[in-house]
Amino acid sequence: MGIFQMPSLGADMEAGTLVEWMVKPGDTVHRGDIVAVVETQKGAIEIEIFEDGIVESLDAALGAKLPVGAPLATILAEGAAPPSAPGAPVSKPVETTQAEKPAPEATMPATPPKAGPVEPGATGVAASPAARHLAAERGINLASVRGSGPGGAVVLTDVEAAASTTPASKPSKTAEAIAEMRKAIAAAMQRSKREIPHFQLSQVIDVEAASAWLATRNAELPPANRILLGALFMKAAALAAAKVQEMNGHYREDRFEPAAQVNLGVAVALRGGGLIAPAITEADTLALSEMMAAMKDLVARARAMRLRSSELTSGTLTVSALGEKGADSMTGIIFPPQVALLAVGAPKRRPWIVGESVMPRLVATFTLSADHRVSDGRQANRFLAEIDRLLQTPEAL
Image (tube, rainbow, N blue to C red; front, side, top):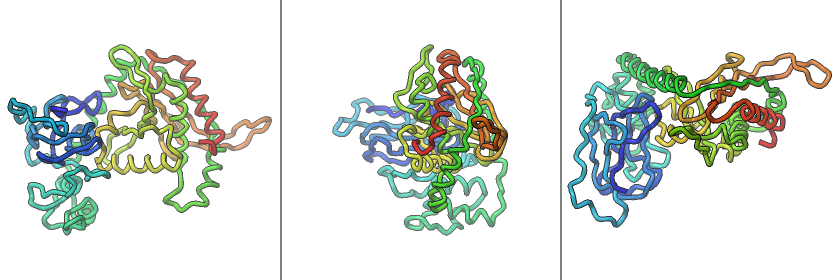
């Protein structure tokens, strides 16, 4: 394997700050394990490893702001001899981040790496990254918080409980983080509008049948297992993308690369401000219950800044929905290097012609932004028509 480098977590990323190692020299790592936490303009991201190996050395200093491609660690394949030459030196930081920069809001991953246990931080208190981040943001002394995690470690819920009775003492840090995210969004969207020849098509779709079927299905389920209309929209979009390939993939180096699977990006509005679009892998293969669970999971982890690097880089098409309340329609800007974005307005009850009659029906406006280098109105129209067709028979989704 060799040198493990700072990954690119988006077209707009130039550098990231290494804030935590989740492994140590001598640890065995496997594909999908979290090895580090890196703070970017999009928040704290858990960095995954994509090959099996053994950690030979950690080559980057905590707190260093490193450019994309900078060496982070040396990881050898099992049984491989260490390099004869000295390993890469500790990377020179682009910008050293001092103690005033809060640790990231990220918790241990759902499938923990071999480093497993929560380790004491600089404070000497065992705490998860998310707990340390929130404590720093709210000015809470971790030593004063009673931990409920393994071995008495302080976890996010402990700090949230303490924060509910403690006034925020560092609002400027939150404002600074939001400002940085806004800069990242602005840079990505400026690049998108400058480089991608957008065109848009809109279609108002009757979703009465989908809503009625969902109401009947949900009536038999406990609240935790119920499915929202948005999950049907996502599943229909994923199936349509699998059928109309020109909407699903990336445009790089002056050519379109169709994707082998549909990794559906979910645009998530963050509570403090900003937007992020992590992806649901192979969304077209998921059952509706699985789609709903995946959406809930992504939204919760995005707002807690606990996303994985692969979730930010694997998207092949993004859907941005306003939910059940809001504006009738919106027009989205494509996330490069993707080639399409579907924006869904809030469903509204409107007079609608059904056969020879006019009756109230629930309808929603679907607006597709597409890259004219890859597709034209014919393919975009096929995509929206396929979504319409699928939503008329929701039981088949």
